[in-house]
Length: 305
Image (cartoon, rainbow, N blue to C red; front, side, top):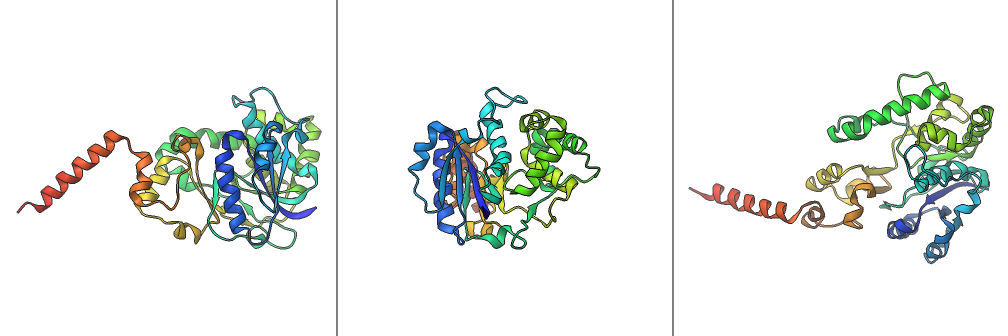
């Protein structure tokens, strides 16, 4: 069993994102951390074509006893199954700790064990309030309120009595010890499976994070996220306008995600594109025409005597 590994749950529909992620992982994986890629059985051969010295491709069939075939909590089976795989991966005994990464992540600087581990055996944990998202009008309206109510529900189920809810959206280091205790001390006494927990609240990272804070199975050494996530187009659009470069992001983060939930129709966005090229996918031809007319009008106004 390795002390630290990286876990990617992906599928055919995200293959181009995964290809980019794995390529950047290989470029910046300073400590040769092992990468486990779990995909549906029909996709194993496709992902196996991606060459990486540190990568192992596994069929999600090894988790067949845990997986679902029908929607759960209004979410399609594939979405729920990727949450289950992240929780159940500890049962394989391959890694004492494993960092979950998304297909749409792109690494931007060298990283290694010291980024993720407080000491030889204890991982850091991302535990934050996400107040920056709370002030985003669109995010607050469309996601925050419902998500916050659901997190409070998880806390009540677990018995965590704390007014401050600390969790993360993803890219967490999962401790196998914490997950074993979650299964043996929380799920099994209730006759629950992973599916039962996700039926109540489909937030696998928050079930882990809040159980960790309740149980204190391992010492908690909190830090801020390793990955800069542009949750919606407004986040990314603003960064482009401010000309935040990859080198700027790399001062604080090891990777960047432009959320594919909204950007998928734009294809793989180039983090290193020029300002005009980066803005282009976000603007319609009509908006480009309006922008051009406004620019000409503004230039004419300023040049008039």
